Image (cartoon, rainbow over all chains, first blue to last red; front, side):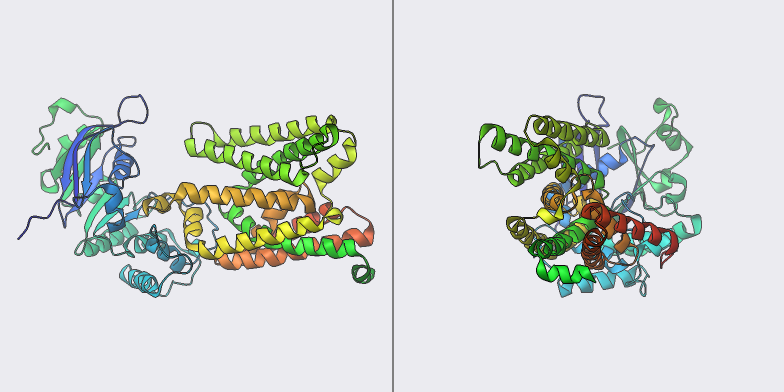
Length: 247
Length: 278
C-alpha cells in the first residue's frame, strides 16, 4: 500500500495580523485520514485563524501547510466547510434547498442554473442530515437545530473528504447538540472531521484527537486528556503541564 | 380617469411612464440585493455623491463651455468613484465602514453644492436633482435605462447562485473559493449605475426609498430571492405609475408621491401582515 499524505499537515507555521505579537507561533501538527479531531482553545487563541490558514484564506508568514499533500488553495474543493454562523439577514428570503445548493458552488462553475448532478448531490445531503421534507421551507422559519443541519448539508453536498466545522454547536441546547454530534460521527465514516469548539468538556466524549490552540499548538489523544491540559489552555501555569505528544 | 386620457395625448407622460417601467426593473432586482446584503447606506452615499458629478458637469458646461461634459456622464463618474472608494474601505477593514460611508455621503453632497452655487441657474437645477423630475426624462435616459435593465437581468440570471451565496453568507462563499472581491465590486458597480438612472425619476434624496422599499415589501411575501425580485419589480412599477397618476391628478411632485405611496404600503405591511414567518 502506498503511503497517503496526511489530510492536514502543518509544519512550523507562524501567523500575525500586522506587526504585532503573532496569534500562532511555530505551530506543527498533522491530522490523519479518518480522524475525528477537535481544535479547542480560548477565545482569541487563534482557532479561527488556524481554520482560515488550512483553507488558504490566509497565508502564514513562515512555515508550510499542506492539505491532502497539496497547497490549501488547490485542496479547497475537497474540503466541506461550515463557517461560524454569521448570516447577515434573519429574514433572508431563501429556501432550504437553495442554501444546500450553495455547497455545490465552485470557481469555474458554468454560469446559470445548477446542474442536475448538483441538484442530486444537494438532495442526497438533505437526506443524510435527516431534514428531508423541509427542502422548500423558508430557512428563516427553521429552529436553531434545523438550521445547523441545513448548514451541515451544505458543507457535505460537494462530497468532501475533509469536513471543517467552526463552532457548529454555538447556540444549540444540549439535546440538539448531542444529536448533531451523533450525526457527525456517522459522517466521520466517510470523511475526516475537524471541528473547532470552545467546549472541551462536551467534544471530548466524541473526538479522538484534540488540537489545543493557545498561541502554540499541542496535540493530545482524547484518552490522555486531564485537568492539567485544561488548565494550560484556559489560564493555568504553562510550565506545569507534561505533554505526551508535542509535535 | 383624466390621467389615462392624458397619457394618450402627452408625450412627456408616456416618457415618464416608460421611465417608471424601465427603472422599476433595475430597482426591483438591484434593490433586492441591496436589501438582503444590507448595503442601503452605501446606495445612499453613492446617490448623494451623484450631486458632485451633476454639479461639476453643469459647471463645466455653463461656466467653461465644455459641451461634452454631460450631467449624466458626470453623475455616472461620481457614482462609480464613490462606490469604488467605499468598496476599498470595506475591503481593507482598517476604517469603520459606517464612518467612511457617512463621510463620502456628506462630502459628495457638499462638493455638488459648491459647483451648483458657482453655476448660473442654481435653484431650479438643484431642486430637480434632489427631488427628481420624471417629467423631464429624456429619450437618451430611457435608452440608458433599457441598457441597464439588460445588464442587470444578464447578471441576475447568470450569477444568481454566486450572488445569492455572497449575500447570504460571505464567509462560506470565500471558503468555496468564489471570487468574493470581484463579485462584490460588480454589485457595487451595478448598484451605482442603477442609482444614477433612478435619480432622474425620484431624485437624489428619495432614491434609496425606491431602491429598498419595494424589495423590503416583497421579501415579506416571497421565500426565494428570485421571487422577491419579481415581486419587487412589480411593486416598483406600481409605485412609480400610481405616484405619477397622483402627481398629475392632484398637482403634486411625482417623486414625493411615489415614495409616500411606497412608504405607506411598506409600513402597513410591517404592521398588519404577520405572514408565514413566525
